[in-house]
Every structure is written in structure tokens, then in C-alpha cells.
Image (cartoon, rainbow over all chains, first blue to last red; front, side):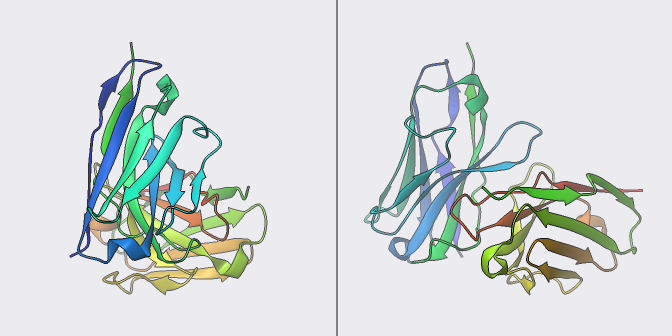
Length: 121
Length: 108
């Protein structure tokens, strides 16, 4: 069974940092694009960042560019999202999602259960 | 960036009825790379449809997708109690991966 499990969420003050991790299992992790998508409380889904299989391509939404860094460890089947200079409007549930098999333009499936990030003083 | 507009915002129907959800794009979606997701309260989204009309693995055949270019539709024939949820469309024809704002399907 394909599974994605996020960890690392929590409460952080504005300007602070947090690192989310996502442990993948049940598929050949190193061959897939991976993404992070977030959802503010009562709001819709917003794509945040993507990374390809060998880390040679990383993409970011304009709202997080320069503050967030996506990375992966194919030996440990994990993907990370390093979040710096956090703002109140970064508060959201962050979902780890599998993308395409060596393909950037693909649907998102499956989704992890999400990690809650709250930025507040 | 491609903008996606879903309508209606809320749809009130009864079990057994047919639901028709719309997703309109601000420009043509390449290769009809359009997906639909279902999100039940307190749960992560779940893929229903990809490529505008291909059902994902394990999705019941009462769910169907159609459309091309800029206009897409998700149809749910014979609503079951577990279908009342929020539905999102998403384009993956470019790397901005934009989502619509969602349609809430509620019990009438």
C-alpha cells in the first residue's frame, strides 16, 4: 500500500522556522516527483512546492519563494520542506503528495494525512 | 497562471440525485490535464478523475468526468451519503498546478 506520513508540524512564532518531513512507503520513491500542498483553515488547496526524482528541479509558489526549501533523501524515502521567515498567513495543514513517475506534469495521488503548522505569537 | 473557477459554490441535493459540478479555466489546459479531487470533512483530498475523464483506481463508476479545453464537468450519478463533501478541480498542464476554489456538495 502506498503511504505518505508527514511529521514536524507545530506552533511557531512569526519569523521562526520549521521543518516538515514526509516518510514514503509502498512504491519506488526515487522515481517519482513529490509535492507539498497547503490548506488554510476553512480554505482551499494551494500548491506550495515540487521536487523531481534527483533534486535537479525544484519549483516554488511565488508566496514561499526564497523562504521555503524542498529537498529529498532517496536513501531514506523522505521528502522535506524547510520553512523559514514564517508568517501568520503560512498557517495551514501541509499535505505531502506523490506526483508523476519521472513526469512533472501529472496528477497528485495519493495524499498524506497532513501536518498542521500554526504561526502565531 | 491558469485560474480555475468552480460553480456552483454550494450544491444542495438529496441522495439518489445527480450532481453536476463545473470547472472553467482562464485559458486552455494543455492535453486536458485536469483532475478532480474529493475532500470529506477532516480528511485529506482523494483523487477521483485525471486526464479530464479517467477514473482513478477504486473510484466507483457513478463518478464521471468530461470536457476539454477550458470547460470541464464532474458528474456524480445517484448520490450516495458518503459523496457529500467538497470537490476541487486542478490543472496540471503547467507547473503552477492551480486548484479551483471548490464546490461544496451538501445534503438537501
